Image (tube, rainbow, N blue to C red; front, side):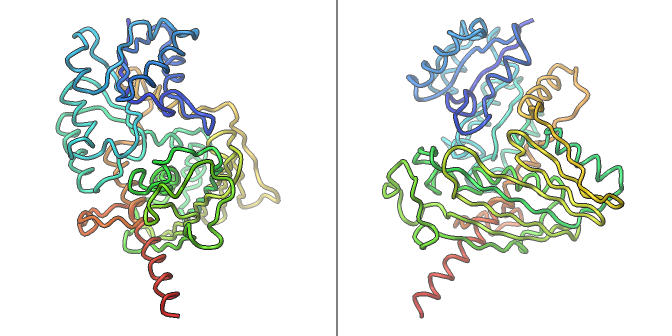
Length: 404
């Protein structure tokens, strides 16, 4: 029986890029094989959408896209798709500023549940880049409509991450701390919007959100007022980048990205978290590590996106244990999990609900400075907390220099 899928976004999330393994269409093809029926691709850039589908029509999976309609808006999809073309699953692979709120033009999830109330949603991370209180209103509406939703924090589905969880559970450990390090290779990051905080939300929201989510997955909820962060800004000597392939002067100075963000925080359970995000490397290879500490144990996950290895130091062993997971594909696992959940055939739960993903967004936003009234509410964002703390620190540094 055919499985109808509607794709939102004709860019790298759904169709792949040179920078990373994101490519939801390939995972759909692998999971559903000849059952896959892509009924439509929604993107306001119709030419780009047509190009993406034309490439698919020349691939071994061409049959899945044979009747795919190119649509500029969700409204157009609603009026164009016939009842037998209504999707079981909608993959939302658009930039965060298009979704996650109830603000007109930034409300993709709400548009979709109105147009296709029986469809499940798979939403890319982070849940948005707008006010956090708006994200919570979206979460409430999704809950009210009983919409099945998964959010693309695929590292939770990693076999290496699940091995870490197993070690912690088997040894009844209490996490003492987490330490995340994300060093980006920026040379091929040419999209101007990505380098503009007002559009992308910044590198913590766009990239480090995965590690903020892993931090919460192991450490628990964060005490938001405890977040402290410092940055290297674009106009400081250590922040000069030599391999940019775009004109950064097109971005207002106040909206340009920090080159390094270093943050710490306290978890509600007593543990401490730390994060360092750096825009520094050339080429396309990133450098990423995530550590968890507990009494007698140090778990270090290296290169979780591509060829993950887990290094475990435990009591009684003179050397580290090393586990390799080269053949694991957490992107596939998360897509397969939501499809199995739709069909009622799965035994594994969706690991990142929409409401839980909003909590990760709270941490990310807390690391950033976004002058929003939502930051005055009790649900002030966690991911944003890092940006807030880092930019306040940068402002204090500028004031110090001016006074010197």
